[in-house]
Amino acid sequence: MKKALRTILVLSLLATLSACGMNDETGESMAPSSNIPVVTGNFGEEPSFEVPLTDPPAELQTVDLILGTGATVNANSFLTVNYSLKAWTSGQLVESSFASGPAEFPLSGVIAGWQQGLLGVKEGGRRLLVIPPDLGYGDQGAGAAIPPGETLVFVVDVIKAVG
Image (tube, rainbow, N blue to C red; front, top):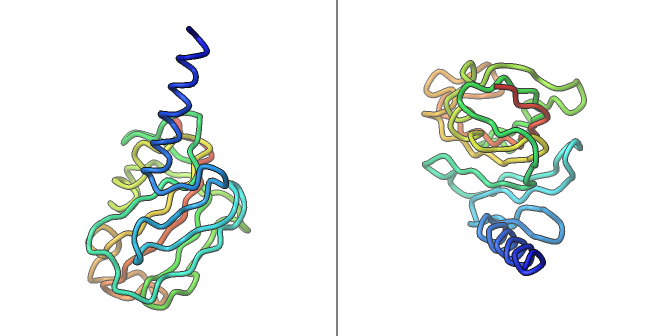
């Protein structure tokens, strides 16, 4: 009976992973649509991804690339993460914490796209976020690398989620 239940749970998990746009063998994104970047790389390593030469999505897009097994991110979480950020328009890397070291912050203290897009990720998980301007830096932008109205593309590894 336990073996049958375990088999059902494994099959259910595989079906869920496939529905999420993940390759169940490699854990890599299988881009659910043509305007979502395909990401390669392992948790804890700098990801590799290219921004498509298409118009960006108008709404927040999230893709679980690697499913974690630890604590779950909620609205009150204090996070330790590594991330890479590219601007959609230029396709250029804006910043990455993979070389400089993880970032730590309360989820409630960052842009709305992270607040909405990271909910439910578990420690040890990697998620792709494509964040439209209204959930990012909007019409003001953020310095020279993020112009006004820019769509943001993040790959985020959740190292720790407390709270």
